[in-house]
Length: 301
Image 1 (cartoon, rainbow, N blue to C red):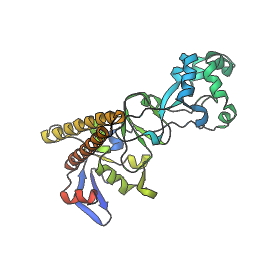
Image 2 (cartoon, rainbow, N blue to C red):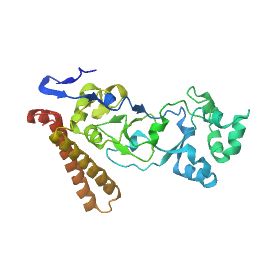
Image 3 (cartoon, rainbow, N blue to C red):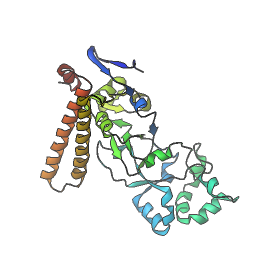
Image 4 (cartoon, one colour):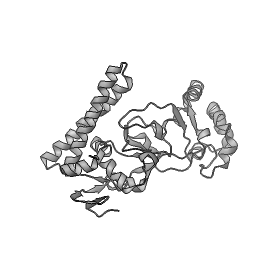
């Protein structure tokens, strides 16, 4: 961990002074530790299904909806966008079978109660039984204390990306272990995490892979410095409000871009998104107290 509460960032041969960012929290502190890995099934071919299979199951067995969750892989997540899942996770959590059945033959009971869903899973029974990370029974997933966090508004990010690549989800999407979730609906925080400054900082404390890709993993995510707003300071308060306003505009513009019909409409919205990114970056630089020289270094100018 970096010194707390003053973070001194070394950039190659540079030591910014003051590129000493005063902050109250790391991201881990700010989220009260709520940075979580995606779900590990141990056998995706059994527990991840496509739209066609999902529709077939629910057409004949609508009660199975409680186990079928919209799911994203890392490649589905694009910063600020609202992805439409085309895959679904069959989630029968550890403990569910024992909590709902008191008969001896658990599989027979489950098969009678959910014949269509059980048939889909049974195709992979042998491999599912070989997993070391299953629940109490082979049709259950491993124990996880934070399933409920997927059912709340949250941020999601892939574990490999060129820069900060965070989305806001309020539609109870799940993800597998190529992603992380952050338990927050704070759009000010979303603006910070997707900013050029935070991407630059992250690149300094983590490894860079071929093509300039960054690996977003828990130990480095936890260290991201979060500028806490002093709401008694009217300037800081207003700057925070402006970040939120711009993030809202970005989310709406990305939504419009996804449904744009003409090339001219797409071009207009792409330019608008780039402009919003620049405005958010400018506010983040201001909040973290960067000088013009420091901004040029961060932006590679």
